[in-house]
Image (tube, rainbow over all chains, first blue to last red; front, side, top):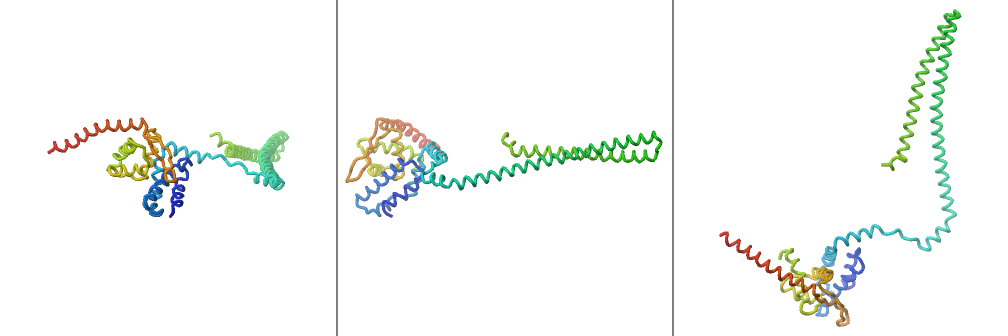
Length: 206
Length: 106
């Protein structure tokens, strides 16, 4: 190893330190090498007579005040994002027809997907609405059938009345069933919507 | 020597080496070594620390076609040496205590 390599090795280990400190350290150790060479040693002998690069640099690094070490580490992590070079800007502008249209296409697809999702959501509510309407119509039919039953009773058509009452009761039962079905569907869809909402937006409130 | 003890002594040793005349790194080590072993990598942070504490100043002088750093003691540095000498009296009496204790146990 020659003098330059020795000093370069020290510099490498001290990499994160401020330049001033590195320069001072190198000056010191170069001076030590020169003193030896002046008292007769060759460059190689002088380097061998010195401590190892690791011993030297670990001593220097160990002596740094803690505040400085922390400051240096923070500076490293908070380095500002680099500014664009001239050729990078030129390239971006030249390529703009391509990436602008790609971007627009991507956004359009995204928008279409959102619209489709919303439409499906509206369809879901429509179906729930249909359940309620079916319940209502069966319910009305029940009322009508029972009413007809009473009418038949008063006009003496016993069998007819029985038929009407029977149908009426059947419809009433179906209507009640439909009511619960529709209610379940409504609650389910509502809860599902709220849950999805919180997943997308709600977490920010935490 | 115990490392902790050594640490306290070396700073003052270095100051004492430049007490009567300015000196440079290599020479300081040669002056101190007969009394306490100190390597170049140990001396370097000491010099930096003393400079930071304004106990010495540094200047570069040309010597044989290259630059050599000379260290010069300041009044604050001399003060440090005086404080050490004062402390030594205390150390001396503690030493008496430690060695006397051994004898009185017999």
